[in-house]
Image (tube, rainbow over all chains, first blue to last red):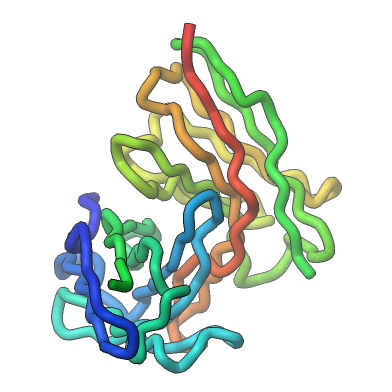
Length: 110
Length: 126
């Protein structure tokens, strides 16, 4: 199984919106709606931000939203805030109950 | 509040076997839709899913690591373990244990990690 493809970096100014893409194949992202997104700050474990393509766990601000089209999933962060800075990773179900990660995107708030 | 804590030696020599255990507290690992997984974060590959196990003992392993990985569960101790054989320097990194939720299609199919433990650092060096 191959890792999902994410852009290495993304940036935006406070208050702006930024979208991070995650591209896979028909064997993973395109196969089901089991896409999740995680935020990771330095020295910390990843934190679940989105699951099931567009569902937010309790406590995650509604500034975070997810979507999917074909083999590509996207995470949009609206109303950027300084604390949104960090790394974002996508995951997807892959064939035979495997799980595959994206390479990660570093989000910088300018 | 569920907590996952990794224990085990943080160092291994090349060709040795790495063994880690994840102790789950304040939550039973016997949940029907709960799977218990291992993930690592290495400089070479970033975050990489290693595999998971159900309390029944059923495992799913990353094909790229399958030949070297064993995951086991001890429900009496509410813990699960990882064994990685024939380690090399490329296995150096942070190792996480986590809960992975797996819901069947009748429940709206879901497959994602929702609770992470703190990482343990593993260094492979002679």
